[in-house]
Image (tube, rainbow, N blue to C red; front, side, top):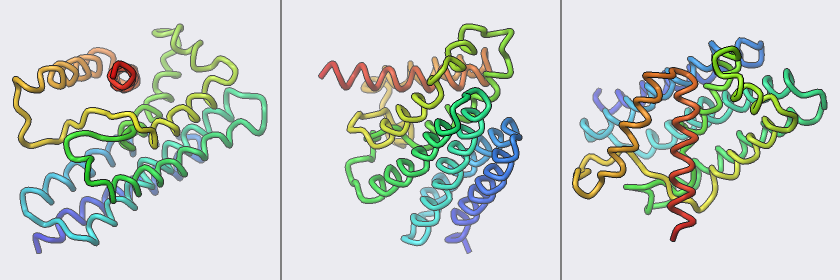
Length: 229
């Protein structure tokens, strides 16, 4: 029975994705965002139990990717589509959000066959991309608290350009820190621990805005490291 425990959490993740998509397309964006965050928690449990129970399987790997495509591909694309439709006047710009689904699928397919992505990610991880987009409706609701961020995100072309940029980062050759290694040594990974601490502080202090800014910082650190080489 223990072999099916990780798959059960993958199914919970998938259910979150299906519900989140329906909610997003019905303009219930904050609830759709919660589905992404809950799905990410189930995705974490899926991998955790697969490792400690030694229950990895080919079908489990495929199920995990398919669930991730819905929760971390379709839901953020639906959220972004609805947001662009709300804040843009051009009827064609919302379709830029559909790139998120396509490039999320490519990202997940590459991850499944790339044996280099053990202690690092090549391309922005789909959960990070999804949580950044999921945080946007909450950020935009807090206009009075962060007017500069609201103005930046609602500037014409801003959201379509953000959708295209994040889509590119999913399949880019840029390396991102992976916070999943079970054998991380503190002395060799001080920078990673510092970044984790900073990200957690941003989330605790700024909540949804902290999620968005934290993932933005995660991307900027990866870009800085990539171009410094």
